[in-house]
Length: 353
Image (tube, rainbow, N blue to C red; front, side, top):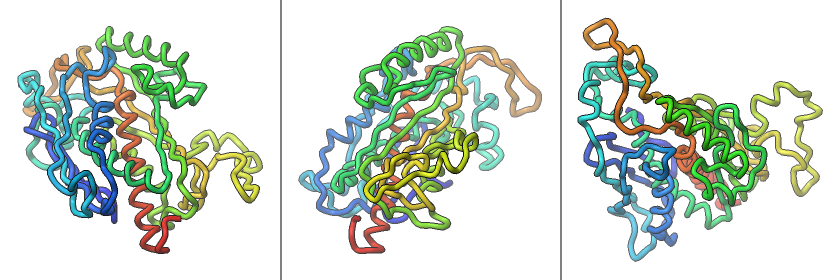
């Protein structure tokens, strides 16, 4: 199973949704960087379940345990292993699903690929796996901070409701993590409606990196936008990615979407900060489409392992909209890709910029 991302800054996650723990091993963190465990925990708290009435009510503290790689608050340059114990799994909620392939889930394909699967909460295919990514992403953000790179993200669409503003200070002020306070209220209402109807709703998450210098990324087969796209699509429940102007550019002429560079800065950013697969110094902007959560309480037709179908109503605790908790995951994946690109550029040129 592919559980690793990166070339020089590598991240390997492990664990299942209802196993003893999930976690991650990070290799390539440069030595001598001050690492405050509280910063890692802060990101874990943003991803953890049970944050509001609009998310799953599974109550996991998600306390990260740093097992190696740090000494007296400083990175050693050795592998950093981190573990997050599962303390509130209710495997009995999934007993009746042992021989059922839930619609929209990865149950059937896991069974076909491996011949065996962990039916409890989706096992390895569960969004629970992303806890390790967020812990690793926190390290990546700390490392990137030493060269002036910052990352922001937020929910910019829920159903047909779109954010018009990008006030990143608003993101942690509302339960949907939307950078537009007015849109956040409408989004909250839409998610609550889906929850009360035992259904779910999808949306779009946007992530932005500032301070990335020109020159990061490796054409032609490891273009920076290609790596970002792959990283975003590796997040559970994501089904599409666009960089900068994305699909909207197909509606315009080249004279409208060619970014003008005045020698100091780009006057527009249709390219989303990347040209030819290489960062150009403008903000890197990516958006990821998040499908509606597949675990819903409404009656659904599901296939059975013995053949035929049955009707199921999925119990347990699930998110009516995954977007608010995808935000820190998407930020983390962007940070991981950029940390790797930074180290690869430093290896190539012997400098950060």
